[in-house]
Image (cartoon, rainbow, N blue to C red; front, side, top):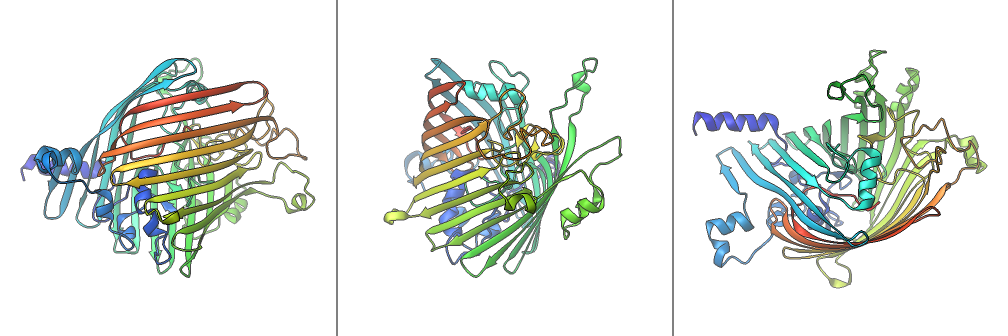
Length: 535
């Protein structure tokens, strides 16, 4: 190797994120469905409630390499060097004795027809991805892409309201064609088979369903340090994160380019137990606290302790911080049938719970779901159905600086709170082809004017509609139905490059407005992350 090559690889390592003999897998559902039947079998010991997964964990239940590099008929163009690069390999691949290095393009070029407004919407995203490993324990991944995208009217409305492209970032302009760039990067180090350390700027997910009421990948990327410990039948995760609050804007006499958004911090403990071969129970506690320059309060060292309960610590400090607890559970009826669920307790007063008074301070969220693999003897078919809900004022706090959100996006469900939702999905894949049919129906109680009915998690729970007599779906009852169908063909499954056709019907209705929209999209994209535009 030349001196320049050595320096270049060192810089990649110092700036990147995770792939190696023990590397982090993409969080996208289209990837996870490839190994889901194996890691959810009765004989599997994988802790499926923490995503993204690590390859070393999943290799005990399946061959990850063969599932990432899906088979292709090796004849004709696929046998040439160019054919291998297009269909099966990284565009640039450097393999050494103790390192691997891969470079690939990142694309999302598509055209969407919005029938209601008779518009053609163009998505134009392009970038680059670097990934690899050094030795058996270090891995890295980094990605950058530039975007000029046009969105349907209902997404444009959400962007104008939050000043954020859902799940992505803050655009340079919020009208017409938002222009924005996204950077992702993490590094990972595994200490034998027991410990893994991951540091970077990315997303995390806790749960076994399509949604998570505990911590999801709905919000934009954020910097974090994650430490996972796996011993015997127990997996323990410590996650320390830095979030941002965009609600406070710079003063009129302040240069916006010199203004820094307010920071808030998050500390999460999640411990997952495999009880026998069929039952898994995970317990999470989380605390969100603000960065306060006046009180000289930054990252609170009390919340770094990995073996402590946050509630007593918070109380002992006279703290105004936002602490929550929850449970994630899964039961394997068989290797093909899985029950799962979640329960999040934001706050509760037992005296007001017993008499069903509808006290605004009794706040919780829940999930109950079922999924099956290979039903009716169809090997590559999977079905999922789940119910999600959150009572009014769940995830709210005194202000947005301590609520359960990051960058004007919810850290859990995209609908916030005060809703009930039903999700049904059918997924089928054969070879490199992937098909999904989904129907997501939700009812939510939206605010009217300045009245806080409990659905907008960025409002203060100090301003409830009323202190007693609250109930889920109070406010402006809104019904939302998203019915969609997607067909994809993975040109190069090793880094998620696929061509796709998507059809979607969305119905939105309340006593103030109604809309029936139909969308048809087709294009080519690199699919490594989930997009949640089903709100």
